[in-house]
Length: 317
Figure 1 (tube, helix red, strand yellow):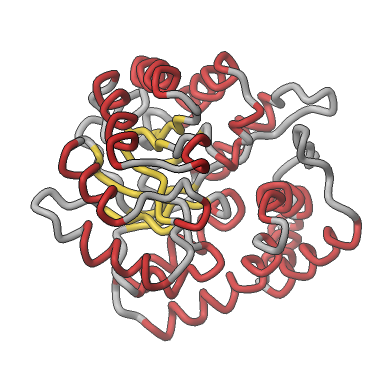
Figure 2: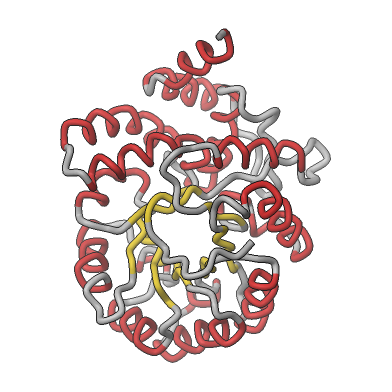
C-alpha cells in the first residue's frame, strides 16, 4: 500500500533476502524476517530490492515478488522504499513504473554502472529525469564515494536536485566526513530540502551528529532497534546515551564492514543465524559463504554488543 506524502527521513532498515539451498527465495523465511523488523519501534519505512537483498542477482520478476511479499507483511504499517537497480535509464524507468504500481512509497535509485567509465552532469540528470517521468514517487539518490566514478560530484548533485524536484533525499555513502558534511549543510538547506540519510554504517554516530535527517542501512536487518535508539538519542542531544549505544554497535560495524565489503550482507545473514532469527545464511553467486573463522568473529561481535546473550535469555523465557 502506498503511503502518500512520504518524505524520506528517520530510521529505514534495508532488509535481507533469505534463500533456500537451491538458491530460490525462501519466502517463509523472508516473511518472518519482515515481521521481525516491522515489530521494531521507531522505524520510518523499510527498504527492499537493494544491496542487502542481493538485488543484482534477482530477476525483474523476483524483485516484483519481493515487493509483493513485503506489501503483504508490512505495507499497511510502514512505507516501502523500493530500489531501482539498472545500468540503463529505460530499464530503470520500467522498474520504477512497476514499483509504483505495486505500492511503493519511494524509490532508491542506484547509480548506473557505466558511470565508472566517466559521467557528465547531463548524463546524471537525464537518468533521473527518465525515472521521474515514469513515477511520481519521491526519489532517494544513492550517493556513492566519488572515487568509484559512480558518485555524483557536488555540482552534478545540485543540478540533479534543482532539475528533478522529485529527488527528496540521498542515501549518503560518500565515505569521507568532509563530503558527508557538505551534503548535510548544502542539500538540507535548499529551498526544497533534500534529506540526507546516512549509510556511513562503519561510523554511524559520527555521521548522525553532523545533522543528517535519518539513516538507511543494511545493518538495520540485524540491529534496527539499536539504530532507532541511537538516532533518537542524537536527535535528543543525549550524548551519554548515544555513546553507550555506539559502544554496542561498534563491534558489529567492525565485523560487518571488514574487507571485502561485498561480504557485508553475507555477514549479516550469518549474524541473524547466530541470533536464531534466520534458518540459514545462503547467498547467491558470485558471493560465497564466509569461512568458520569469520563466523566466529561475528559471534564474538554479537556477544560484545550484548545481543547474543539477550537472544538466549529471550528464547529461554
